[in-house]
Length: 107
Image (cartoon, rainbow, N blue to C red; front, side, top):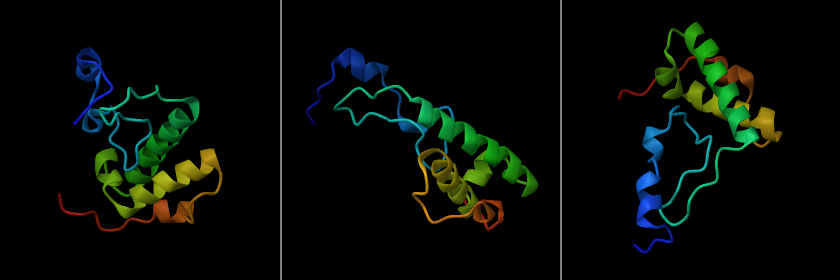
């Protein structure tokens, strides 16, 4: 695979699996090894902050830690709710869907 990045730039990249917060949706741009990603912008930080707050609040009410909450349908719904709150109504989802505990997939 050809790359537009230098060896030093490639070495400095972090795979998405090692992002600080493994959310159901990415909250910052990650590289495809062809370009150096822009830093996380203010709106992406806001989505991330809202999503983490919902995970702690709703996950706690459902008896789940943040990681486990993100593995549920409610965690995915919370991701869409956070994006709607920051970017406008993009997804047909309600906060109630994020608050509803559903079976988490078996890891």
